[in-house]
Image (cartoon, rainbow, N blue to C red; front, side, top):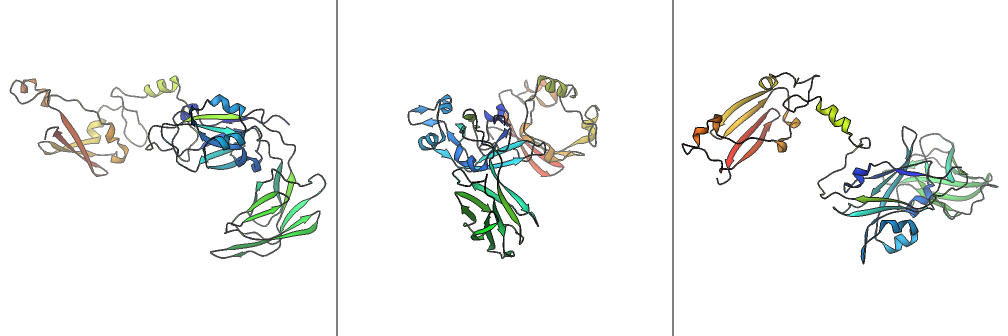
Length: 357
């Protein structure tokens, strides 16, 4: 079996400007042993009593020392396989991270391939069991078989989900477990193995076998990911999107080749053709509503498609009549603010106010 390898899916730019409620995604060369993930993965803030932590030191620490010495962040950890058959680990802090702070994700070298797992051998539906812990188990998987069998019909109410399991060792009945999957007592424990029962329907006669997946193969060394959070909590992570990538110089050149002389992206499908010089006349209509107000009416565009915070404007005498300054009707020292109000999805009110009014 080859060595276990891990790499970070999040791009480096994101790690150095990390949203406060974002997840860290790791790709592993094989499925991790799920009973080891919570005991061997920690997220800590890079602050010590006597100064900042030297991240390089973490490669010499073990998980016990890290958890004892540093304040760690509670985590949700999910192991899964994506549509590209990659083994992924999604690590999500349960607490919002602090802005403008440094964190380190620490993976102890004792992490290994999955070596004990649960295989559903008799199935009547989508039910499943989750192996929570088997780190110090005393199973003899090389000589014995261990099967958990559902021995009762499902009994599900709004407040309970009662399932009876029987443990069979080498085909012989052993311990009986009565579980309420809707309660906090929803685990089966035997031989230092802990199994979680999901709150779903289990069919009478379904069987789950504890199997040996192979020899444990740990990491060669500790794995550390350095993270620096964003300055503001207003920056939110994107959801349900593919991991971001760096924009290359060629990407930028390709973008600007599609701009017209006014710096607007060219659209030719299902909307406005910005290559057409007359697009403004066809799209925008101005209606004056007072000496310092006007309404902007849109045709194809909607107000939701416009970024009003990014409006730029040029100040100067009305209608470029520069003699207004000589008449005392205009001064470059006068400053104005533009106030906008969206009236509906096609209409925006603009108000020009002097800063001293």
